[in-house]
Length: 186
Image 1: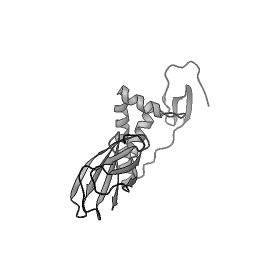
Image 2: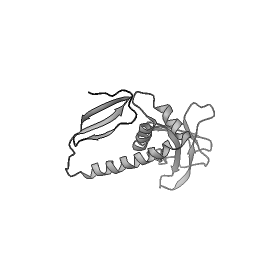
Image 3: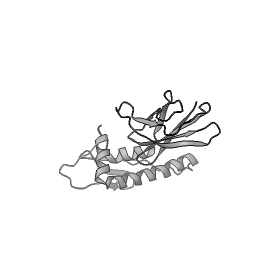
Image 4: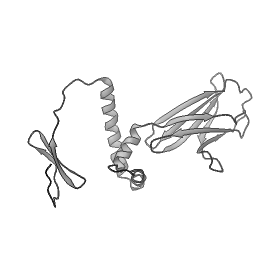
């Protein structure tokens, strides 16, 4: 590997087969792999399109100082950048791991606890309660409980006298707007 000291700007192609780039303050020269011209599958095309959207999302977020600071705080490891964290955040949707309706008896004020996770941050959780026939009884955003024991708690606002067959759906959203959902039937 060759290096140049006190370089200002350096990068690009050297001929048709060598690339030159600056990595961690050092100049790296390496062979450029040959591009494959094979036909891509639908899955590969969809991922390429999604990655392009993720890159555009990350670029926009890096222009907002407040959001950039959030992503920078998450970039704790070596070779991690705020941009890379933002790309990953766009690509990975949140997951609703559990809906705990053990305290829900169909009464106003009953609690439903939702466990939702994301690689970066769950922005909000919406809870929908439907009767056995699929008619919406109520819906709204979950929030932290008064003692901050559970991260996402929904408190019922409408009585539900026919509890058997009731469906509770929770949808978690992350910063880019990805969704993860789960449902339980009582």
